[in-house]
Image (cartoon, rainbow, N blue to C red; front, side, top):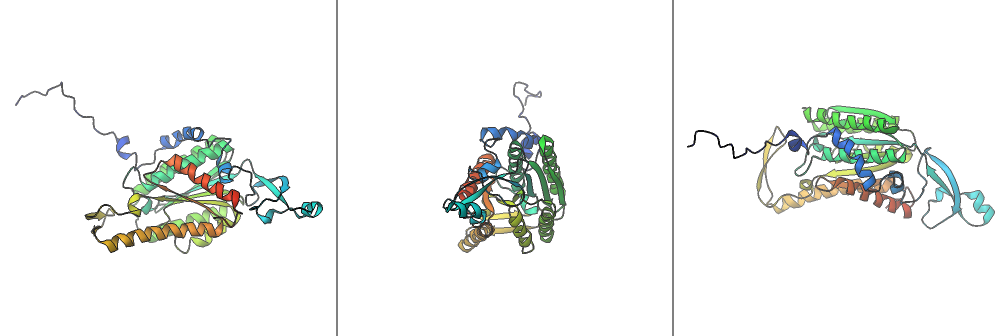
Length: 338
């Protein structure tokens, strides 16, 4: 064997830490870079988050974060709660009060980093997708002139930033999203009850701090949404505009091809057989029921809903989700959505 190394053959470059961790770590620079996608997707000042949710029209949002704009004739599908009875009586035809949303409306992004979110089989963890989607919503809200705040929660605890305007307000939120994710990954508390308690604590915090008329985005896989969460979520839907974003991984919806697989949660190990038809059917049923439960809850209380898979393009999926909500609100009275 030739005793000296052949320097004409280059050694393969080791994978950089950035490449290895890109789907498992929330990086502040990536969240900041997301601002460039806003203009490209048409979510800037002319098509901000509010316009998309309103179906491209000014609409009567909930709470005090609105200003009276004009009176117009009633149209089929309008919310009768905003009828202007004086003008209706005077003109003999039904008229509606139209409001425009406040220029600096408080926007909260509530992001779930609990143990079940630190999972992903392709592309990225659910928690990373949630953080990137939240950053897009923050930058879009900034273009609209809103004030942005956050509540991030995990088994490690929760962290909050009250809404603040300007670029500095967004950067404060993005810093929390990146830093708290690192803490969540290092946490050793994987007890399911801790995740549920964190969910309740986070929503209770939002309920106490959000001023009426706020716009609230909740990004989660909703695996830990127990009965204690429902009263807080219902109360938020009464005083605020709430949009629930379900984050999921393909493996949660569909088992891999038939075979025997070893699985682990980091401490315990097991085996499952995807050749079993009853197991496959039960697996699909559990995911479908969780999704349908969240969707039904949103319809029942007039909240927006869309989902993002970890394998899907985040920016395009967020934009499409907001457009769908807006289209439904354009034709269906708020409070009886879907």
